[in-house]
Length: 64
Image (cartoon, rainbow, N blue to C red; front, top):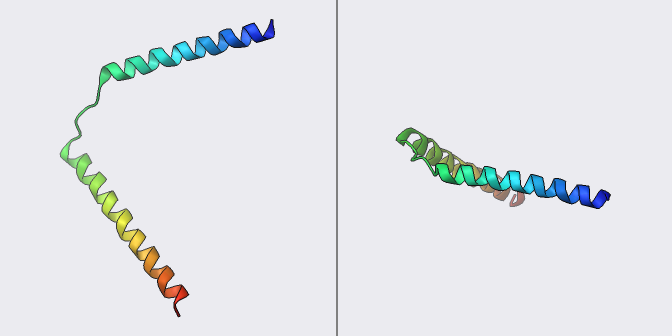
């Protein structure tokens, strides 16, 4: 009897998840504005720059 309750609870949660996902998919994607795209590209460049800094520091540390 406990297993039946767990199954029904799981089914209820899965159905709720499916309904929520369907609502989100109906909304679709909004186009990004210029400002947001510029920020995302700036962050990408920053990450690559910091990766280069870390690799350079590691190289200098282990090759002395």
